[in-house]
Image (cartoon, rainbow, N blue to C red; front, side, top):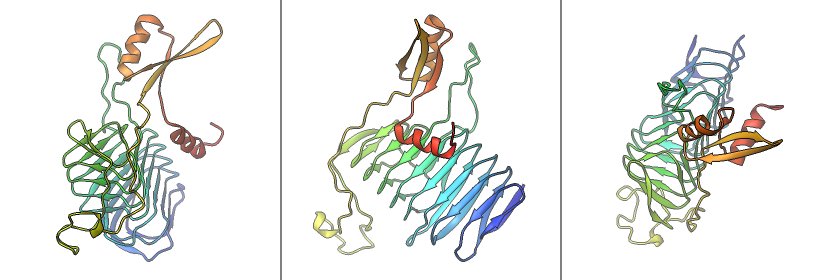
Length: 288
């Protein structure tokens, strides 16, 4: 294991590297335990507390940087996994981000994380069905769009997809899609308000100290009407019959396996991913 306490350009014989041309930043912690890992900072970055752990091989952390506020995080990156952080991403205090088992956490530009947020594509430990021995808690990608506000103690788990301009309410738990320009809250989170927009100026720290309408703020580019997302189809069972291949969709992996056990034990159960996720995976693994 290699432990670095300064963010600066770095490479080693195991193919681990930090790609960064800015001034050295002390008081960070970066751990490399495997090989072929890459940490890229594309521009200037204002850091609070940063702890990055590359547990395995071929992990990627790509940070676009921020010019205001600060970014503080504990980031864990596992085998073949990626964390992509957009421009002007800020946090109120340390957030937790985790991606393992080939998953990705992608966060867009101008995202505002509050306090005690966790963004976890995985559960940290495997859970198995005692009857079939099959895994029941697969790790899944997480995507957060541009100009999203994640309020205090909100948690996003594998499968969360939050579109541009939305707000995740205090203490909420997100596990699926949230459409653009909406407010989602609760456990599990559900959309409680549509056709909304938010802006960064604080109610008591930025004049005017009363903000009754939109004339009191500068509008960003994310003032749009809410559009419904396509329904989530997380797993399909693939099987062949009479020379043709068929795909049967299910709301969960366990439901797909139950169907397979009853009707077609040779079926392959696979997760469904969106076109952009597939494109990113193929870009990362040419020839797959």
